[in-house]
Length: 279
Length: 264
Ligand SMILES: Nc1ncnc2c1ncn2[C@@H]1O[C@H](COP(=O)(O)OP(=O)(O)OP(=O)(O)O)[C@@H](O)[C@H]1O
Ligand SMILES: [Mg+2]
Image (cartoon, rainbow over all chains, first blue to last red):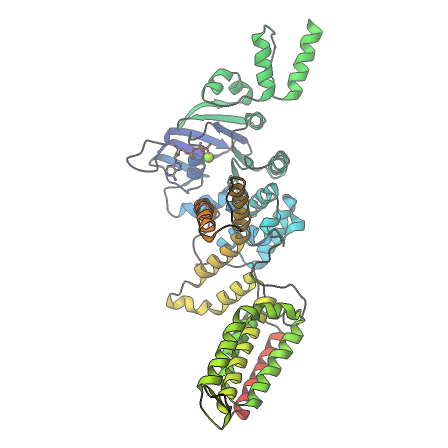
């Protein structure tokens, strides 16, 4: 395992007299993993994301991305190139007047020659399956398509990490699925590291690892099966458990006992069958 | 509102559509200058021929040209009348007692009106055959050298292109808010003026709030994607100066020489 990001004892607040939004946060991100960050509204997830690519700087502690410290002024651009963020609102991050212009935006910023840009663009729109829309204007695209264009704009820069900051929360179920599917393919085929900030614990259940945040602190961290064992704690900090888990918990209260935690519908059905066969 | 065309651009494949936006911008600019060379019937005829041929070559439906002229038509007519009634030169044509019309006045009126007409037609032709984004890129490239004297050319062009990008989005949003307010009984298109003005406020306030939010988000997204001003930035949009563009300039040169020779 290779460590890509290391956050060390980071505290942050937006204004001096305000309370800390992040308190002594420490975490590390490994190459090639899908890390989910969950937490209630205002728990500091977006703030953390902005610290990870140098949009914000820590008040205390350090953020290291592949060895670059975001405190060094020269490192900022290296960090921004390595860590891309897909934001929540598909409309408010579309800079260009067409798909091609938008994907090019980051490349233009890096001063890449036009020929090479064209190569990178055609390569990355293919990966998100938007190659037939190059000349399309943003207001003619669906939310999911816009988010895929945003992803293309980021991977064109060949980053090591893509952060999805609730990137699917404004999309319809179909759009959500197409965006997540795209990211899963990128992870599988390109070995992309993904940090997914989400309210959707069902999605988080499919991650390699989960970090739980509450009121600016990391309160839990681990494999989905381990984190979801603490269902009460998750509910207490205001998170909705995945539906299959809710069903299982309701059944357990009624006296039914299960061997393992069911995080997906499939697992729940299997457990129910096993239970049926045993009794 | 879904099919709104930003600006006035009418897609097409004509010679004029295919010209480099820089060539068109420069032509429009030079035309504004050489229009003032004309001072007799012959030179105005020459300018008229150039303008009409340009309109013809663009293969645009005349309706579009007319639409461009419509708002300015009243100004043209007024200018014409002012000159007819107020310029007292040359022989008296007729006398209606309370006003006298002189030949010089009619001539001046016609000339000034034609001058306005040609200017509007040529500039409309520019915006009708060039996408707003191409115009922006054209202006940015043409004014490029001005960066050295501190003119924020890149920033201006970026501002323009972002504005162009967000016009449809904001229109869509306006429509949505209007519907929401209509559902609550607001009236935008009927009723007394006072009521209608009042209903604009609950439309503008949410629109502004969301526009500021969008601006903030966009700035964040741009920074996240490594934007740091125009310094060292490259561009995906490529302008190609071709034979066609040079031809246009030769035509313009011939026109200018013609005007210089024929003016009195
Ligand atoms: N630009 C800002 N200026 C001042 N305070 C801010 C700013 N952005 C966020 N905050 C505050 O910081 C806290 C954490 O916000 P943050 O956006 O990081 O939370 P979040 O976990 O992403 O929430 P959500 O789930 O709603 O996106 C909140 O209390 C918020 O009010
Ligand atoms: Mg957030």
